[in-house]
Length: 111
Image 1 (cartoon, helix red, strand yellow):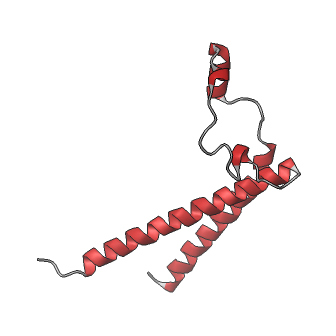
Image 2 (cartoon, helix red, strand yellow):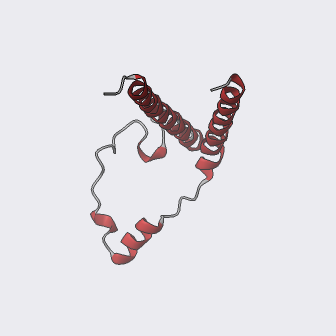
Image 3 (cartoon, helix red, strand yellow):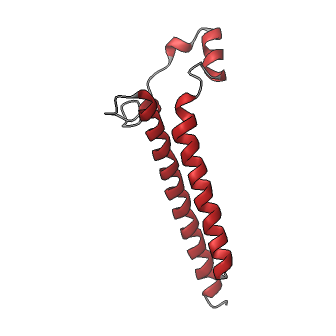
């Protein structure tokens, strides 16, 4: 990959991260608090009260809020930022592993 192309890809990724982070922090906390389609159907069908808490209900970002942050909008924005960061790190890690596997297969002598 040429240096220019690498810089272009890097700029694209950086721009995508900035846009995702801005949306998560600025727009996410202002999202509707009304029930989504699945919750609405559960309420209409009368089984919404039978839901059990998930295994992560006591987690540090349960309910899309960060524990210990008093302001709900800030807490929700931080949870969004953390979600963007974790998703990026996991995705980048998987991409690096896949690239190494492909490089190893192409570098290995064929039989």
